[in-house]
Each structure stands twice: as C-alpha cells, then as structure tokens.
Length: 253
Image 1 (tube, helix red, strand yellow):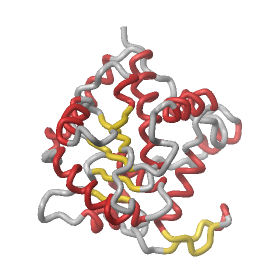
Image 2: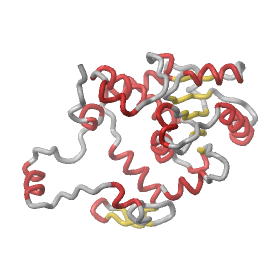
Image 3: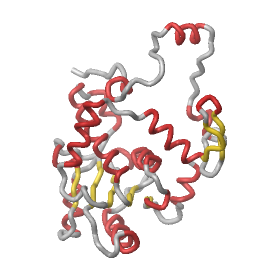
Image 4: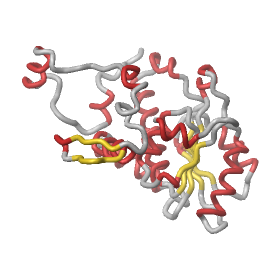
C-alpha cells in the first residue's frame, strides 16, 4: 500500500515561518493576501528568475544589492535546514566513506527517465576525461577520492572498470541498488521507500556540496542545488552535449 507524505518539508526539514493553521496565515488567506504563482509565470522574466549578475533588494530581510547567485545560495541555506536526525544520519554516512576526510572530487550522474525528456545521457568516459583535467588544474596532478552521486548504481562498475586504480565511493553501497530514477514510480512507493530515497538524496547532496570540485550535468535539479550550495563558481563543471554552453545555462538559471 502506498503512503504519501503529508509534508515533504515537515518530514525532513526544520520548520520555517508560520504553520498553515496559524491564525495570521488563515486571516491572510481569507483576505486573498497569499499568492500562489506558477513557475512558468516567472520563467521568461530575467529579473524575477534572478539571473546571474543581477542585483536585488529584499529590504524586509536586510538584503541590499545582493547578486542573484549569492542570493539563491543564502535562500537555500535558510530553507534547507535538515531535521537533526536526518542531518546526523547523512553526515555519519559520509564520514564512513574512506577518502572524504581530505579534499575530494564529486560526480553527479543522472539517468533514469531523463532520456524521455529528450536528454542524451553524458557518457561515463566524459566524466573520466573531465576528472583527469580537473586533477591537473586543481589537485596538483593527484587524483583524489571521487564521490559519486547517482540514481543508477550501475555507473560505479563502469567507472571502476575504466579506472580501477582510482578510489570511487558512493551511497550505492548503503542502498538497495538503484537502477535509474523514474519520477512516475514515486506514486507507488511505500513511506519506507520514500524515506530511503530521500535519505540517499540528502547524503549525496551534502557530498556534492562539500567536494573541492564537482562535475555534473545540467539536466538534473540535483546538480543545480549542489551548484548553488557551493562557495565558488569556478569549482564545478557541467558536461553538456556539443554545441551547448554549460556556463550560459548556469547563468540564465
């Protein structure tokens, strides 16, 4: 039997703001002062999308002339405050993996249902080639441990076959063997399956954010969240198909 989450935010994150049943919230909704805006309404407006390089003021929060990317990073920090138990479990899992106590590199590999949206999967060898370049430029020609966040654990065998001397670690060893995330499958998951999915997700997101350098793809939200959680724009690289500019894509988001 499936068990849907009553609240994704409430189950995994610390409370933010007022609850829906607060009298001030109820009064605001009654007076029509709460606006629900579809994301497409803001998509074509570069200011509302807060594209990179633009400056914004949110006087009620004390933000003046705040650059878009920095503002998004701050908002993620304010909103994504994991429940203590979730945070502790995620950090313990990362601490148990060898090689992450020093500077490390991270991959984000997305497969699953993304090919149905017209995306061509980035090949595993492209990650390997990019990692070799990054190791020269940012790791003094030393190949560090590579943390792999992926919805398809089969990539671990692919990476290890290509470079058996490298140290690849991932949360796949602690999961039930994911073979590609399919969004439509979530409606049939039990609550336990949903919890396991997000447990793995949070471990991977924190792992991506903590890496010295991160290599990913632009066709997954995980890569965008990780990019905005990281302190430096130079410290991540998106692998796009020929003819596409990852930096341009990053700027317009």
